[in-house]
Image 1 (cartoon, rainbow, N blue to C red):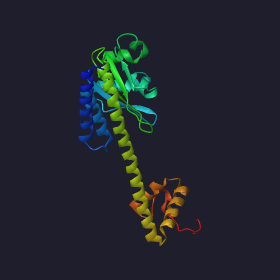
Image 2: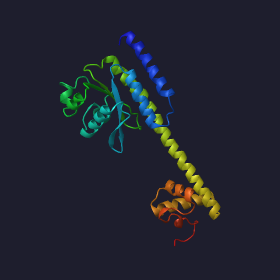
Image 3: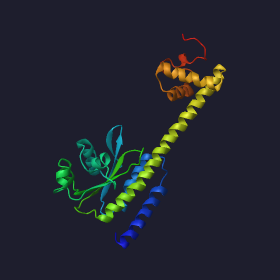
Length: 253
């Protein structure tokens, strides 16, 4: 890479990092996804629009598109199971980047024959998809669209690849924060439920927890949901959960 390009790359990535980390908290996934798209379109040379494709329960959905055409094209790739974003999510290359330099002709038009003409029909001739996942994290791809062909040069590809690493770490942080928040909420709910049972039935903390476990097993309702209903409604829960809360050693009625 030319020295001038190296300097420009460092500046671009520093700017992107500052924007992503300083604008908003990372506890809101939608805000973070929007940040990533906006900063990427501003940072990667040649990008006119963008969006994120994310796997959810085995399905790929379009998130935070910069316009309705991008949403349509991201959803089209998911529906056809064809296009650069599908390729990068399902078969990520070593550098994490898949690019279609010219969707109007071979080899790109032949590689994605159903997707290519529809992208061109909406005014986009090239597309750059970057893998945004870390091991154990959410699988996602950043899709950058350009109205011109052959617009993503070596510098743009390198910038997108390195930007993708930063964005992936940010997404990983959001994912971990969400799971931590859920774990803390579950702990607090179970603690509240145990307190109610200890006060109501004059039992120990261990006995109260066993009462929750038994109720969960007998009603086939998750332990945290039993605790949630108990914390919100007392000992009366849905489907007779409250009736199944009994002290250890008490016979089943």
